[in-house]
Image (cartoon, rainbow, N blue to C red):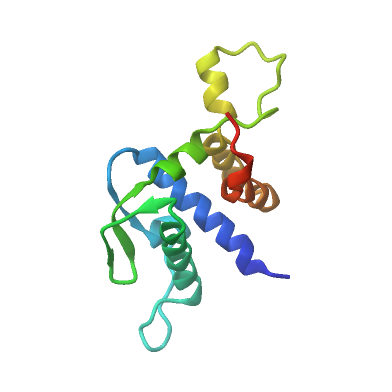
Length: 146
């Protein structure tokens, strides 16, 4: 089983959600804030888990989901912000995310149906398969939904 892929999806979602919460401000996006404290190895290098999370954030930047000015050693991306692509993907509504029979105001329905809200709930519930499914929707550019 490829457990690192589940971690990748969770790291990507957590990093993008942190930027979504701060949008449009630029922030320092610390790996430790996303995955918790990881002890360095015997040589003082970041753990593989820490390196994987940083790698996921750098991949997101390479793929155009976020921008940043520099790295802070192996610890963070400095002056990070969502790109237009990242913002639009996270804020788009997912069909059937909110039941039609729920009497909610349009603004609440829009927020609750957003991919960002759905990802946040999946992470909070610890439902790794749902996080993976939603992250794949995030990365699937062909499925842009209004």
